[in-house]
Image (cartoon, rainbow, N blue to C red; front, top):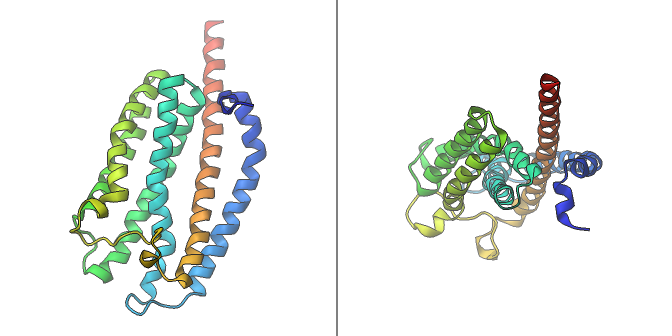
Length: 242
């Protein structure tokens, strides 16, 4: 069995119909468990107080905002190289979800930063690149809406996705590239010394799993909708020609 079989819309619809309820259920379970555990059963931080609990929304949403763009990059490359329509529609479907995660990350970051830094916003390298990534999300969605021919729209948005990937990379690694800036380093790291304390770390992992599964569920759902919309457009076009 080849992975490219799932580029067939019929095969994708069959597989996603079976997979979607399971992914959705696991996403809800992880989110409910992780957020309740994190917000109600973890202590306040000795420096940040209860403000530290924003980590359970901010870190997963920021991670998924960047990883959503990476997913869009991969599916855009598949479209450019192999011309599989499902990959282009999956990229289109992921963009509003990624934008939503980006907005959540920006808002929660502002609420977290104000008591910690004394300001709602700072032109920090990571924050600035993250804001530019948000603008690329908006531009990507607008470009899809502005072009009538779907294949042309897929081509141009794929190119835009390639360019925007630079800022997705900077959003992830700006702290390493530039030592100056207010933003802290990674909350999760292979270096145990950089990780948050275990009492925060374990519920954070559950929340991250929930956000990942939620992203997968929403992208599957939206991709199925895009495929149905494409089929409907094709049927209407045939009726007009008949």
